[in-house]
Image (cartoon, rainbow, N blue to C red; front, top):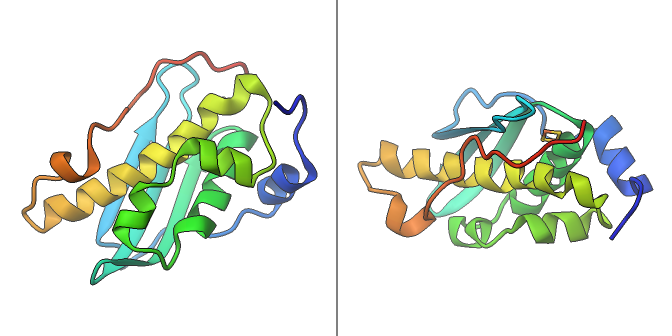
Length: 145
Ligand code: FES
């Protein structure tokens, strides 16, 4: 497990990809961490079964910003099915690791993507729970800021 931030994490933190809002989003998800107060909002645009565009806004720590950035890069252009398979573990691996006490920050990105996909299904009149599963909103894990 990494003890410090890798150069790749720092690069995504200082130059995050896909930041902002998507005006024509058809799925929006927001997830918060009750302890540290960090909030992530994810916007997706779905065409057919594919996420053709994605943007995020994070009011949170550097790890949350870096993981959102890489997670959006990893699922842009992918099918919903592929996006739902993205775990926070895969995101952390793609970043070259995170310090152990910052792993929980990566859960925000994973869950915000799920929340946006759930919102997309709700807008279609489809119950998202059997497809997306339970979403951990306002998870209470400790945040060492
Ligand atoms: Fe709260 Fe990282 S998400 S400290």
